[in-house]
Image (cartoon, rainbow over all chains, first blue to last red; front, top):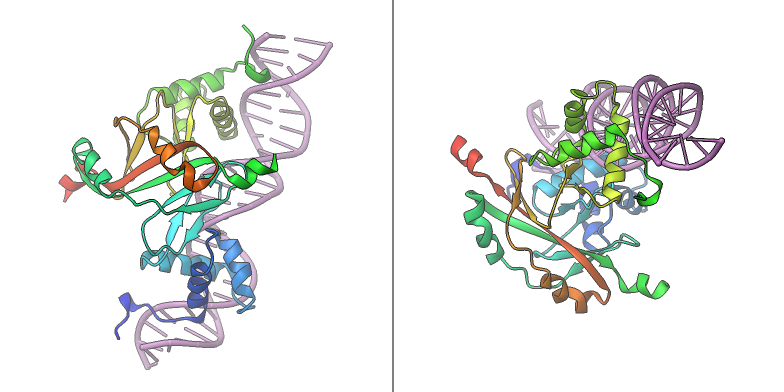
Length: 132
Length: 132
DNA sequence: ATACATGCAAATCATTTGCGCAGTC
DNA sequence: GACTGCGCAAATGATTTGCATGTAT
């Protein structure tokens, strides 16, 4: 049961990961911090950030940045796209089949290797539409 | 010759816009600041940031965020996608025909309005491939 | 004249980091 | 025991903002 790259287990990291798994809200570090604090009152925000990096490097979570000034995190299980509401900032997962062939399409233009792509949709969600 | 929304002309803003127009490098505020400083030595970084916001709100430039911790700017003339090299961070414009119909595809899922989408490709550029 | 823009410096805010101690293997 | 992770607090770095003054209309 060797572990990846000298990484040791820790309660903090596990709670952070589980917390992220259990939400669909793509939260930021602060939100996760407040959440995990219920179980581990002494945890620090720095630890949250450090572990988010570790989890990201392990490929267990994804870091999202929509240019709001704060980064969001996502415990994804499979590739998917996002829809961002321009009114309320909510991020929704889109269960659209992702097209891997879309990478091939630009390979010739780029003249390099294309690993992945990211597709974000912007608009106004149904909740915000109904508010008006 | 009324101007949009009580915005007055300024040398600083014009230089910033022209500078951005003349590069394909998707620079950040700091880079623009250093560049514009050649012509306007007394300009301040704060002014650069303020004007980038103005230009963005006027729809003349676009703000990009690839989660590097700094925002990049792009004086786009038409919609296009981006390729980001994971090695050197270079951003390249992709002259691929953008698919507007791609918005329609998710409209039913989102149950809201879809204004636009953004498609970023990640990989390794030809320069970095050759370096190895 | 009046509103908008600037330069400067200080403030803010998210994120990172150094350090001495604690937990895991 | 050696190494990794933690909490705390201080540091960093990008971006924002208050203010007195300058500029465009």
